[in-house]
Length: 193
Image (tube, rainbow, N blue to C red; front, top):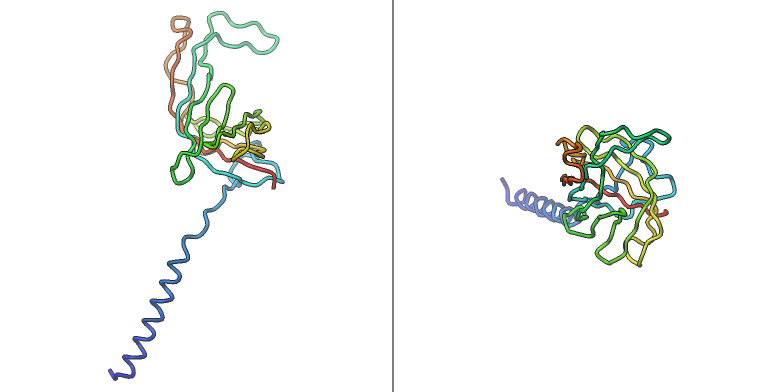
């Protein structure tokens, strides 16, 4: 091969290396914002809102064995018992795994590390598969404090894993017993667009 051809090939290789290096330094594509496309309509956030923060809640749910609640207008069935949701206790992590807040209750409260927090009113739930807490959509009450939770309009609980009532028996013999169940769920925080 001639010196001229080698020089030309070297120039092309050098230009390619510079181009590849420039592409690599651009960084990764921005993370996709959470999509509601695969969710049941009941738990989709109304139009006019945008994702403000995505978190992964990792923690536990406490249940207590209590008398089974009766349907409105109906007397309670004697001796009927059920596991009743008492409250959650979870750390809220960002998508990178860094703790950014906590979720606890009652009442159900989402609190940012900056001290701002919200409570909410449930709007809807939808099945999320056997053994998993249902998907949930709540409407946020006005935030307490200024910070990340200020302006939050809705919170979705999605991508749930575990958290359902325990499989152990709930009977008059263990009335008042508490069981703790591990769970994980994504909490998507929305603000007005």
